[in-house]
Amino acid sequence: MAQTIEVSLIDVLNKIETKIDHLDKSIDAKIEKLDSKIDKLDNKIDAVETKLESKIEKLETSMNNRFNTLTLGFLGIFGVLTGGILAILGKIAFFPNP
Image (cartoon, rainbow, N blue to C red; front, side):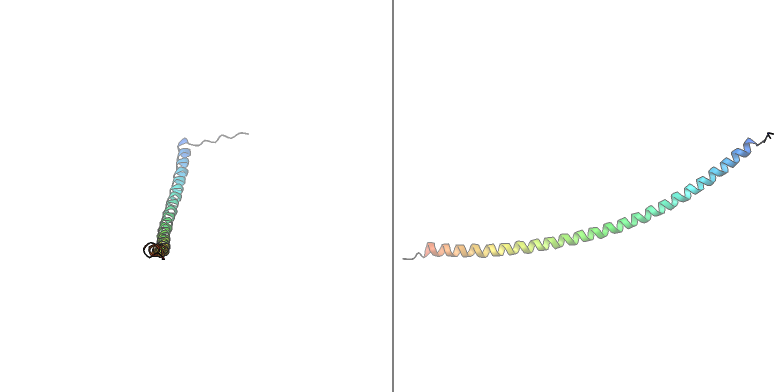
């Protein structure tokens, strides 16, 4: 035996609209939560970026200092060797052995 059920179309539409509103609020809440998490991640990334920039700057300074030390050491040794060679050549040129 079949029973006929009469449901008002307006009632069905109202229920659907209520469910849509509920889902819309749920989605909005989740979007706000995601935005909050994204903001936190942005702040963390900014903090890491500043730390990395600081470390890179320190490493550049350290490398420059080492390079300067090596350059000065090399030029010092080169200068001493050049001076010694020039002294020997000067002695040979100006004071030849008789």
